[in-house]
Length: 185
Image (cartoon, rainbow, N blue to C red):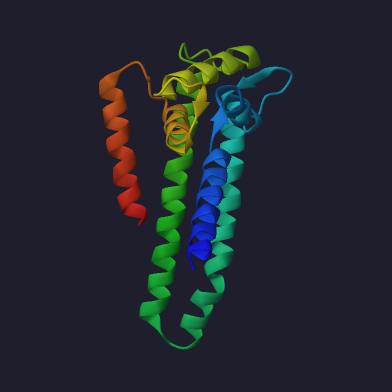
Protein backbone atom coordinates (compact mmCIF):
# COMPACT_ATOMS: atom_id res chain seq x y z
CA UNK A 1 0.00 0.00 0.00
CA UNK A 2 2.84 2.40 0.84
CA UNK A 3 4.45 1.71 -2.56
CA UNK A 4 1.16 2.58 -4.27
CA UNK A 5 0.83 5.87 -2.37
CA UNK A 6 4.48 6.74 -3.02
CA UNK A 7 4.05 5.99 -6.73
CA UNK A 8 0.89 8.07 -6.87
CA UNK A 9 2.53 11.04 -5.13
CA UNK A 10 5.60 10.77 -7.36
CA UNK A 11 3.38 10.70 -10.46
CA UNK A 12 1.49 13.79 -9.35
CA UNK A 13 4.66 15.70 -8.54
CA UNK A 14 6.27 14.80 -11.89
CA UNK A 15 3.15 15.72 -13.83
CA UNK A 16 2.67 19.01 -12.01
CA UNK A 17 6.30 20.06 -12.44
CA UNK A 18 6.20 19.13 -16.13
CA UNK A 19 2.97 21.09 -16.49
CA UNK A 20 4.48 24.07 -14.65
CA UNK A 21 7.53 24.02 -16.92
CA UNK A 22 5.31 24.03 -20.01
CA UNK A 23 3.74 27.27 -18.80
CA UNK A 24 7.12 29.02 -18.53
CA UNK A 25 8.54 30.95 -21.48
CA UNK A 26 11.65 33.00 -21.96
CA UNK A 27 11.25 36.74 -22.46
CA UNK A 28 12.44 36.39 -26.05
CA UNK A 29 10.00 33.54 -26.77
CA UNK A 30 7.09 35.59 -25.47
CA UNK A 31 8.02 38.70 -27.47
CA UNK A 32 8.64 36.64 -30.64
CA UNK A 33 5.24 34.98 -30.23
CA UNK A 34 3.56 38.37 -29.93
CA UNK A 35 5.37 39.60 -33.06
CA UNK A 36 4.09 36.60 -35.05
CA UNK A 37 0.51 37.72 -34.38
CA UNK A 38 1.07 41.17 -35.90
CA UNK A 39 0.71 42.04 -39.61
CA UNK A 40 4.23 43.22 -40.45
CA UNK A 41 4.93 43.66 -44.16
CA UNK A 42 8.48 44.36 -45.29
CA UNK A 43 9.54 45.09 -41.72
CA UNK A 44 6.76 47.59 -41.03
CA UNK A 45 3.25 47.64 -39.69
CA UNK A 46 0.94 50.57 -40.19
CA UNK A 47 -2.10 51.52 -38.17
CA UNK A 48 -4.12 50.90 -41.34
CA UNK A 49 -2.72 47.35 -41.72
CA UNK A 50 -3.53 46.52 -38.14
CA UNK A 51 -6.96 48.12 -38.49
CA UNK A 52 -7.64 45.97 -41.55
CA UNK A 53 -6.72 42.83 -39.62
CA UNK A 54 -8.92 43.94 -36.75
CA UNK A 55 -11.88 44.57 -39.07
CA UNK A 56 -11.40 41.16 -40.73
CA UNK A 57 -11.42 39.57 -37.27
CA UNK A 58 -14.66 41.37 -36.40
CA UNK A 59 -16.29 40.30 -39.67
CA UNK A 60 -15.26 36.66 -39.24
CA UNK A 61 -16.35 36.49 -35.61
CA UNK A 62 -19.67 38.21 -36.40
CA UNK A 63 -20.29 35.62 -39.09
CA UNK A 64 -19.35 32.84 -36.64
CA UNK A 65 -21.66 34.11 -33.88
CA UNK A 66 -24.50 34.60 -36.36
CA UNK A 67 -24.12 31.14 -37.90
CA UNK A 68 -23.66 29.37 -34.57
CA UNK A 69 -26.94 30.73 -33.19
CA UNK A 70 -28.96 30.60 -36.41
CA UNK A 71 -30.27 27.05 -35.82
CA UNK A 72 -31.29 27.85 -32.24
CA UNK A 73 -33.13 30.99 -33.33
CA UNK A 74 -34.88 29.20 -36.19
CA UNK A 75 -35.87 26.27 -33.96
CA UNK A 76 -37.30 28.64 -31.36
CA UNK A 77 -39.16 30.62 -34.05
CA UNK A 78 -40.55 27.46 -35.69
CA UNK A 79 -41.80 26.09 -32.39
CA UNK A 80 -43.46 29.40 -31.49
CA UNK A 81 -41.17 30.14 -28.55
CA UNK A 82 -40.81 33.92 -28.98
CA UNK A 83 -39.13 34.34 -25.61
CA UNK A 84 -36.40 31.80 -26.45
CA UNK A 85 -35.95 33.35 -29.89
CA UNK A 86 -35.50 36.76 -28.30
CA UNK A 87 -33.08 35.34 -25.73
CA UNK A 88 -30.88 33.74 -28.42
CA UNK A 89 -30.86 36.92 -30.51
CA UNK A 90 -30.07 39.07 -27.48
CA UNK A 91 -27.26 36.75 -26.38
CA UNK A 92 -25.80 36.71 -29.92
CA UNK A 93 -25.96 40.51 -30.15
CA UNK A 94 -24.25 40.86 -26.75
CA UNK A 95 -21.43 38.55 -27.84
CA UNK A 96 -20.96 40.51 -31.05
CA UNK A 97 -20.91 43.86 -29.22
CA UNK A 98 -18.39 42.59 -26.63
CA UNK A 99 -16.20 41.24 -29.42
CA UNK A 100 -16.37 44.54 -31.32
CA UNK A 101 -15.46 46.49 -28.18
CA UNK A 102 -12.59 44.08 -27.49
CA UNK A 103 -11.27 44.45 -31.05
CA UNK A 104 -11.54 48.27 -30.88
CA UNK A 105 -9.81 48.44 -27.50
CA UNK A 106 -7.12 45.99 -28.57
CA UNK A 107 -6.43 47.95 -31.75
CA UNK A 108 -6.00 51.17 -29.76
CA UNK A 109 -3.93 49.47 -27.06
CA UNK A 110 -1.56 47.67 -29.41
CA UNK A 111 -0.91 50.82 -31.40
CA UNK A 112 -0.46 52.81 -28.18
CA UNK A 113 2.11 50.25 -27.00
CA UNK A 114 4.02 49.99 -30.27
CA UNK A 115 3.59 53.53 -31.59
CA UNK A 116 3.74 55.87 -28.60
CA UNK A 117 4.50 58.88 -30.83
CA UNK A 118 1.41 58.15 -32.99
CA UNK A 119 3.28 58.21 -36.29
CA UNK A 120 1.07 55.46 -37.72
CA UNK A 121 4.06 53.30 -38.69
CA UNK A 122 5.85 50.72 -36.52
CA UNK A 123 9.17 49.21 -37.52
CA UNK A 124 9.75 45.54 -36.73
CA UNK A 125 12.96 46.32 -34.82
CA UNK A 126 11.15 48.90 -32.64
CA UNK A 127 8.28 46.49 -31.99
CA UNK A 128 10.72 43.74 -30.96
CA UNK A 129 12.49 46.14 -28.55
CA UNK A 130 9.19 47.37 -27.06
CA UNK A 131 7.78 43.87 -26.61
CA UNK A 132 10.99 42.68 -24.97
CA UNK A 133 10.80 45.67 -22.61
CA UNK A 134 7.19 44.80 -21.73
CA UNK A 135 8.29 41.21 -21.04
CA UNK A 136 11.17 42.39 -18.82
CA UNK A 137 8.88 44.66 -16.81
CA UNK A 138 6.40 41.79 -16.40
CA UNK A 139 9.11 39.46 -15.07
CA UNK A 140 8.39 40.36 -11.46
CA UNK A 141 10.81 37.84 -9.95
CA UNK A 142 13.59 38.83 -12.41
CA UNK A 143 14.47 35.25 -13.35
CA UNK A 144 14.45 35.87 -17.12
CA UNK A 145 11.35 33.73 -17.57
CA UNK A 146 7.67 34.54 -17.78
CA UNK A 147 5.54 32.19 -15.75
CA UNK A 148 1.85 32.01 -16.77
CA UNK A 149 0.66 34.90 -14.55
CA UNK A 150 3.54 37.10 -15.68
CA UNK A 151 2.89 36.27 -19.35
CA UNK A 152 -0.79 37.10 -18.84
CA UNK A 153 0.18 40.42 -17.30
CA UNK A 154 2.58 41.19 -20.15
CA UNK A 155 -0.02 40.41 -22.80
CA UNK A 156 -2.69 42.43 -21.01
CA UNK A 157 -0.33 45.39 -20.73
CA UNK A 158 0.56 45.08 -24.40
CA UNK A 159 -2.98 44.88 -25.78
CA UNK A 160 -4.26 47.57 -23.43
CA UNK A 161 -1.37 49.97 -23.98
CA UNK A 162 -0.52 50.09 -20.26
CA UNK A 163 2.75 51.66 -19.16
CA UNK A 164 4.34 49.14 -16.77
CA UNK A 165 6.52 51.84 -15.23
CA UNK A 166 3.43 53.53 -13.73
CA UNK A 167 2.30 51.77 -10.50
CA UNK A 168 -1.16 53.37 -10.68
CA UNK A 169 -1.66 52.11 -14.24
CA UNK A 170 -0.59 48.61 -13.15
CA UNK A 171 -3.02 48.66 -10.21
CA UNK A 172 -5.85 49.82 -12.47
CA UNK A 173 -5.08 47.11 -15.01
CA UNK A 174 -4.99 44.39 -12.34
CA UNK A 175 -8.35 45.60 -11.02
CA UNK A 176 -9.83 45.55 -14.53
CA UNK A 177 -8.45 42.05 -15.17
CA UNK A 178 -10.00 40.83 -11.91
CA UNK A 179 -13.34 42.34 -12.89
CA UNK A 180 -13.14 40.74 -16.35
CA UNK A 181 -12.36 37.36 -14.78
CA UNK A 182 -15.32 37.63 -12.41
CA UNK A 183 -17.61 38.59 -15.29
CA UNK A 184 -16.58 35.54 -17.35
CA UNK A 185 -17.00 32.99 -14.53
